[in-house]
Length: 240
Ligand SMILES: Nc1ncnc2c1ncn2[C@@H]1O[C@H](COP(=O)(O)OP(=O)(O)O)[C@@H](O)[C@H]1O
Ligand SMILES: [Mg+2]
Image 1 (cartoon, rainbow, N blue to C red):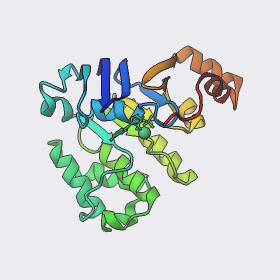
Image 2 (cartoon, rainbow, N blue to C red):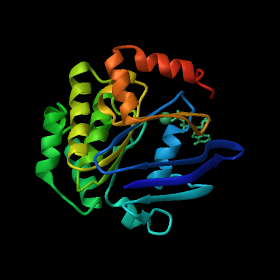
Image 3 (cartoon, rainbow, N blue to C red):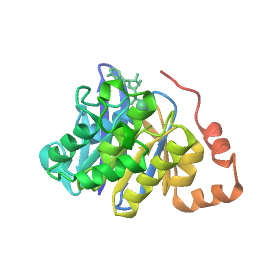
């Protein structure tokens, strides 16, 4: 569903993503881990067509995002970091706008997402008034409205209280269960271990290590701390 091959992105002289390849099948949740500056957000923004690429190919549902961006991106939901919201729209107007842009207005789904994410009471508030955690949740809801087949979730579960974090996790899992291909970056190793089908650990723009499904299942069995040990043994602290 999401296929990236040899993706390279530079910011001036800085190489942010270095010949990275990955693919995500429908129903999979791939966790993108790695220190600050590893290139996680850049990878996702490149897939979302928001950041210019210096090499490689990206397709969503078999459609090349460079040659046919509108077609490729129509079924792609993105929760960016920090969240880009239409500040002078209310929360429900924001969701309605995003769903319409995807060609799939669906107020019932938007209301359902708001309720599940504990945002029912915030529906009529302007986005610019929201707290950090509420913005994270609105951004997640907006990624999920419309008929999305692929999802890019950039640290959207950060800073959420335990109830909200669980709700966020559940809506992402539900989207995958409905067949969405999901890439989700996070520093929350416990959540990654629990939610993801497999993990990709990045460092300095490259894939340092992939943790495939069987290995992840083994880490879960070993219990709390096993993934943390693997991660800390593998990558250094943040580079940039
Ligand atoms: N807009 C930008 N301009 C210049 N450099 C950037 C920009 N965005 C990110 N970078 C650099 O690209 C690298 C990857 O950043 P990023 O993709 O944000 O990493 P991550 O999401 O893993 O923390 C870092 O070295 C960062 O400083
Ligand atoms: Mg980032």
